[in-house]
Amino acid sequence: TITASPGLRALVVLMTLATFAIGVIQVLIKPILLPTVSTAEMGVVETVAATGMLVGAALVTAWKSARPTTLLAAGLAGTGAAMALVPLGPGAWWVAACGFLTFACLPLSQAGAEVLVRTQVDNTRQARTWGTISLVTQMGYLVAYLCSGVLVDHVLQPLLEPGRSLSTSVGAVVGIGPGRGAALLVGLMGAVMALVALTVRLQRHRLTSPQ
Image (cartoon, rainbow, N blue to C red; front, side, top):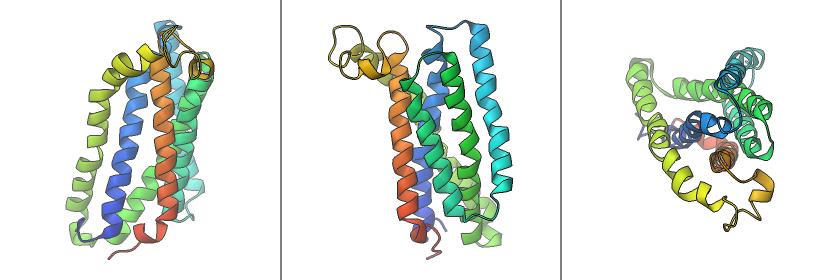
């Protein structure tokens, strides 16, 4: 069913990229903050960020008349923008606000993706198709969990140490020292999410085509 539909194939690829980006922020929010905050403050930041999901659910209800591609693109764009802002501001509350916005936008993209799948798949194949799509797309999380730490520790963080190649140019924007490599990677993943959102917008007719 998935391979027979260009729309479903494209959706699976796009949502796998999106879950990869979200997996990165899930892994790196602690390394970003722990160099500068206590564990108690870290817990508060995570709680504030997580409550964004409740707001996002309310947004889905309020925007229920929107087209699924609009929900998907808006959710991805909002998530990407919030993630891109993470490395640009200092302090725990800045990260908490960005995390809140990130997770507030996620339900929009999840709702849009689910509607796109369910409207293109025959009722007798819904469970198998949705289960397979979930399995494939959530591999993005696994890849993010495996490689985020390696990319930060061995690539980005060393480049942001004082006296290194990125410490003057990029470091002037995102800062240097512990945790800033992690913040930079989250910001880069935000740019990836924005590109995914743009692709959804440009390919909206293809995503809604059953054949």
